Length: 393
Image (cartoon, rainbow, N blue to C red; front, side, top):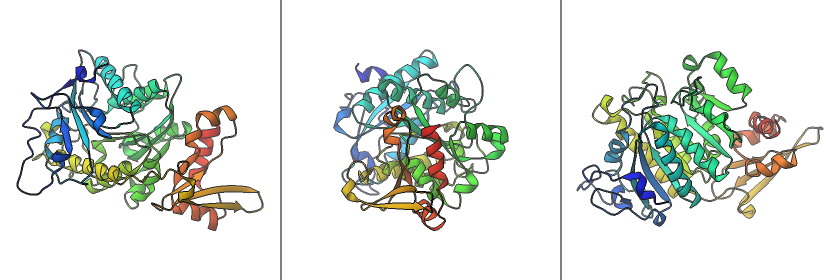
């Protein structure tokens, strides 16, 4: 398969970042597919950026298809986050004759990029594009976790995939390759108690906006555990993101989105990061585009500081702690990275067949607070119970 067949080049004016403000600039680190130029060799860099100009399945965000170039315009003009950064920008996957044609192209492109070990940045378009992103991992036979920064759960009904129900269509796939879905920043008045109960019955992870606002570090282990991190711009408050497809006065601050993006960039597990549901026609002085470009900058900075410290890769680079819980004989093993001070804990899977399938999911990112909870409260941390139930349910 020739990847270039799926892409349109970027207008050179979009990436004309030359300025005397500072050097070096992020655009200096990017090899882009521009009009009149050759399609770049995407194997030359660990990071690949692509746009998807598709919004026909968006419930609220018709008009988000042009967003990739507006984000690029701001991204290329930012300072270089690290001297060793290398990024290839393949241009834009154009909308197909039908939405399913676009999905097919996304699946084909991501399958090849992921199989070759690239980390992929996807600029939408609407966030139903998370469905073909998931399908690319399914084709590769990879069991994955998805983290969605979104004020809603995307579990609405309907036989046709759209931005409000793509999660339903993912979980109905058989065989299923979704281990866990994490929602970060849901807002109760948008989802209601019945939908929250449904998420609990599905044993998915959720964190309310009100939980994360005062302590964003609660989200870090969940992001670190995710293969795909997808951002619906509507999760950011309207004052910071006026061009969100479904704007609201409440949501994350722009700088909080940047921190979440940095968490994803630093995660060794995250291989796809996506930004969706920005409608450029609603923007004010490209404020939203600039904010998303800065969030992407933080993802790139985080990526440059990945430490490769997942516990199974180098056991000698960790301190190991065994916590005995009272007289029950229950033991929880924690691992602390000597490189980053990040924590993981072991969660057992009792069934041999399931253990083989979910082997990489039995080491769960956690926080120092989870370790303290086990030590000082002599109790199993709630996060441990959550993943024990998923592994053994």
